[in-house]
Length: 279
Image 1: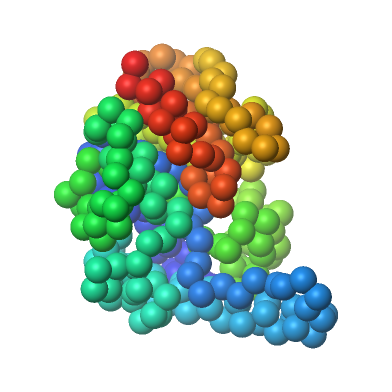
Image 2: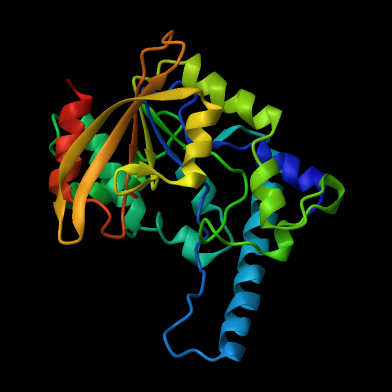
């Protein structure tokens, strides 16, 4: 990757409205079409998977920079971006009647529930995903703290290397990714807009902030206000940590919560969270 490509991706902070009422933030975007290692895979098979995944990631970056070169934008329309994507995996979420994307379906539950006293109808979630999720005309935005999509938070691939910026490995990447420009873009939409509630998901290990997501709390100058017990699972309790801005000048309810998807949160605990948010 060169600096020009990086700057295009750095200028893109997510999808949806530029004046959102609700924000859902993650650490970085995922990448569709990634091959996961299977139990029993040989070293050669794992290496083959990695080579294939790097090719998929690079194609993702090239597609994004192509779109952003033609239409530079801080916020894209989620549907418009995906329906024009050359990858079948990326297009499939919005083709025809659509296909449920597991994480997005939880976004839909949260966003519908916030506007409907914690109630959603499962049979209508796909319609919401296809027609309303991450649209420019919506009441929400889906933001990412880091600019480069990765399959998992701990991943590093050579296509992410930017030699001229000194980004040669994962450690350098994590240290350098929140540029002054990206910081300004994120702060503008969060602090200068109409935001009422911000949810930062995938950020907790039990009732503690993950080291990776603590960067968000430090960067936004947040302080912990309250710990909420949302429910229980077989492997322990489900929590949300409520934060606020240290300067207290902006009354935004901010919640760090488990990942929205992959069994990290339950329907009951999400309804409990929505009830707390709507107080």
